[in-house]
Length: 489
Image (cartoon, rainbow, N blue to C red):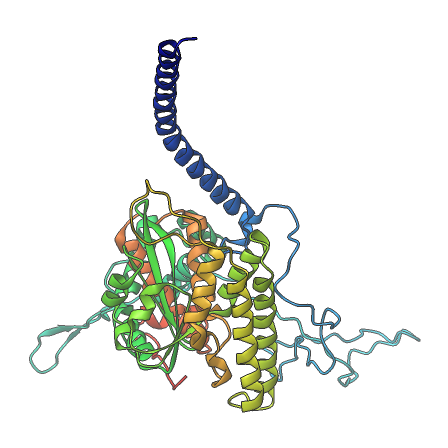
């Protein structure tokens, strides 16, 4: 082979290599978007798998969404006690009254041995039993009459006047109105079933419009009472706050609760965060300690904060089950141990945890966090095609960061044992709103949502303070709602 032929062969090989390189570059350019798409699909699959793995013990999902499968993990630890009443528990049973409304005597007519008549023989009380029952329930009709009286002096006629509450020729009284609103707003019976119940109980044949009108009237009269409840909560030393989604005319809105052991305030808003809280006006005025979840909007307010332990338990259980990270299970057990220990110290009438024990709990807390950070994998190398911005973190890393930055909020009960471990007070006060949504699905108007919030705020507060719903509503329809009692929390 001549030198010229060898040179020509090298030129052809170089040209082929350049062509191959060009094709490879084109292929890489086509594969990079596909690679990004595959990564995105993997993330989406992981996200869907995580959603399917969630249940009521590892997230805020309700127990009704768990299905029929038995959950493997229980947050509540077994107490070791037998079910039922414990030794020393005072039972409750029906007790006899001293002065019965009616006495029915049962005496023998003849002697059971010789058949001698006993009609004229005096007897004595040998035993007694009482039956508690309801009398016949029927409407009591009160007729109001106006009299015309002629004055003997001037011979002019004067007419009496009807009470201001008697405004129609025929109307239902305050007790019937209170019972109807109690069934509809308190017991959450739908309108049709409320009407059926009233017809069956006392023969009232009310219309749907009358029931709605009575509810709106009660809400209007309760507006000052609900405002006072809000003022008292803002002045309390400890309040619970939470929010949940509701439907108003088919669209998502948010029901906000602010409450204490004695007070409940409910209202609704189109926003979940700080805009709604500022407009409601309780958090901006509050200077005590607030118990809530990790929603960042609460952090904007200048008060002491505590984080709900039940939310943290669910988050730790979720990370332990989904990411299989041991530190999360350790933190889960730590929080349960802390809860049990605080209950024991409260039983000893202590106001705070003794210093030595407190330091041990704090040390254990941060040791678990340190092991959690050590167990985290290195962050992935960012893709050159992704835009700059905050790098997405794993659920486990986000929880670690929250537990570290909020350590003083999680451990605050060590220095003040009056702080509850959970935000269950707010959860309980929101529960009936969720029941209402399950029954009705939505509020059909803004007026209906406002009516529900006002009446439920009043009824929940009155129940906490020892009043029955019916007596509280009867007072409303007498235009004198029961006063709200208050003492420092």
